[in-house]
Amino acid sequence: MTDISADAGGAAPLEPGGPLSSLPGAGGPVVIVAAPQRVATARWRLLLNRPTFLVGAAIIVFWVVCAIFGKSFAPYNPLAQNLLANNAGPSGAHWFGTDQLGRDVLSRVIAGARIILIITPLATILGTILGTALGLAMGYLGGTFDLITGRLVEAVLALPFVIIAFLFIVALGPSPRSVIIIIGLVFTPLIARTVRAAVLAERHLDYLSSARLLGESPVRIMFGEILPNVMPAILVEFTVRLGYAVFAVATLSFLGFGVQPPTPDWGSDVAANYSTLLAGYWWQTLFPVLAIASLVTAVNLITDSIEQVLNA
Amino acid sequence: MAMFLLRRLGLMILTLWILSLIVFFAGQILPGDPGRAILGPFATQNAVQSLDHTLGVDRPLLSRYLSWLGGLLHGDFGTSYTYRTAVEPFVRAALINSVKLAALAFVIVVPLGIIGGVIAALYSGRAVDRVISVSGLSLAAMPEFVTGIVLIVIFGVELKVLPVTASAGAGAGVFNQFRHLILPAIPLILILFGYIARMARAGTIEALNSDYARTAVLKGLPQTTVIRRHILRNSLLPTITVIATQTGYLIGGLVVVETLFNYQGIGNLIYKAAQAKDFAMLEAGVLVIGVVYVLATLAADLLLIALNPRLRTGVSSD
Image 1 (cartoon, chains in turn purple, cyan):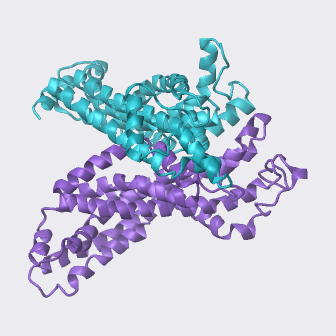
Image 2 (cartoon, helix red, strand yellow):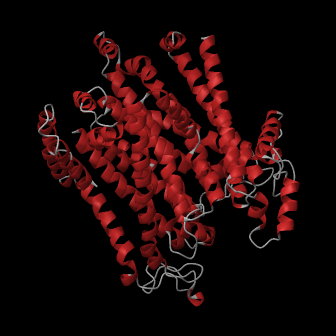
C-alpha cells in the first residue's frame, strides 16, 4: 500500500520536469516536489520498523497466500461432502471439524479467504476512484456544483450503510458484483468529502495560479496538478476505508447478499451454520469468525501504523 | 433561537423528503416488475400482471409516488406484499422491540464510553491510554456477528450462563426480558464504545490543555472538582454529537444482531422483508428508521444548545 505513496511522490516531479520545465515559473515546483520522494522513502523505512505494521502485513500475506494457493495445500476439497462424517468436532483428521454436510471446516476457511480478499479491495478502489473524481470537482469547481452535490452527499450519509445496501442489493440481486458496486457507491461521497477538504487547502496556492495562467484546462489542473499533491490524504482515506470495507463485505455476506453457497466464504459459512451453535457444534462458526477477526485486526494495525507514520 | 429551530425543522423535512424519494426509487423502480420479482421467472405473464394489478404497481409512477406519499402522511404505510394486511402493526411492534434492545445498549455504553475516554485522556500516552484506545478501535471495527458468535460460544454454549435467543417469549417478566437482551446488547456496546471513548478522550485532552483548566488548577481547586466542573462539561459536547450520529450506525447493527439472535425487531423485519421481496414492508421499515435517525440528530442539536450557551447566539446570528 505504501508503495503507492512512494510511487505518487516519485511520479509527481516527472510532470513539471517534462515539457514544461523550460517555461518560467515551472522551475519552482520541481525543487518542491523533489522532496516528497525522499520523505516517502524515509516514511516507508519508518513503517517497516513498526512491529504493529509487520504483524498486520504478515497476517494479510498469510491470507493472500491462502487465497491464491489454498486449493493446493488445503487438506480436503472444500466442496466435498461426507454425510457419514458430518458435525464432527476437531480431530486429527479434521483439525477444525466438519460442518453439517460433512465438509472440512479448515479447508473451507483456507479457500474462503479468496472471495473477501477480492471483493474488499475492488470495492474500496471503486469508491476511491469515484470519490476522488467527485471530490476534486467539488473542491476545484466549487459554486453551485459543490452546493448541489454537497446536499446529495449529506442525504446519502443520513442513511445507515446496511440499509442502503439492503434497498439496492434486493433490487440488483445478491452477488459479489452487487456488493462491490454498492460498497463503492456508498464510499464515494465519504471519500469525496475528504478529497474536497484537501483540495480546498490547495486551491489558493501559487502553483495553481501558474497553471491557470499557462492556460491548462480545468481537467488537467485537477488531475495533473492537484491530484499528486492531495495523494497522501487519499492514501490514508483509502486504508481507513479498507477497514470499513472488510466490515461491510463480511456483514453483507453474513446476511446472504454476497457470494452464494456452496462457494466457500467466511461470512456466508457463518450464516449457514450458526443455527447449530445451540447443538454445541461451535467449530463450524467459530473458525470462520476468527478468520474474519484476524483480517479486520490486520487491516486496522496497518491503517494505524500508516496514520502514525504520516502524522509523525 | 426560533429562526434556528425553524431552519432545523425545514432541513429535517427536506432530508425526509429526499429519503422518501430514495426509498421509492429503490423499492418501486429498481426491481422493475414487482410481480415478476415476487413470483419468479417461471410464473406466467398473466399471473404476474394480475399480481401487479392487485398490488397497484401497474399505475403510472408519479401517481404511485403521490398516493404512497399521501398514505404515509395519513399514517398509512401500505399493504404488505407477503401478508396482504396493513404493514403498520408489524412495524410498530418491531420498533418497540428494537427500542428496548437499543436503549439497553445505550444506557450501558454511554457512561462506560465517557468514563473510558476520560480515563484515557487523564493518562494520555501511558499504558492505560494505549489499552483503552487500541482495544476500543479494534473492537469498533469487528462486525457484530463476529463478536456475537464468540459471545454465544463462551457464555451460551460453554458456560451456559446466559440465554442465546433474544426473545424471552410472550408474557415474560421484565427481569427475564432483560436477561435475554444482555448477550445481543454486548456486540452493539463493543462497537459504540470505541467511537464514544475516542471522542470523549479527544474532548477531554483539549479541555485539559485550555487556559480555564490551568486557572482552575492554579487557584487550588481539588482535581476531582476541576474534572467535574470544568473539564467534563466542555469535553462532553462533541461526544453528544457522536452519540447521536451513532444512532444511524446502531440501526445497521440491529439488523445483524437481531438476525443472529432471532429477535423480532425493526432490523429483522427489514431483513425478512428484503428476503421475501416484500417491498411495501421494506419501504415502511426503512422510512421509520430514517425518521428515528433524523429525530435523534435534532435531539442532539437541541441538547447541545441547552448545554452550551455560546451556541445559542452563534446560531441565531447566521
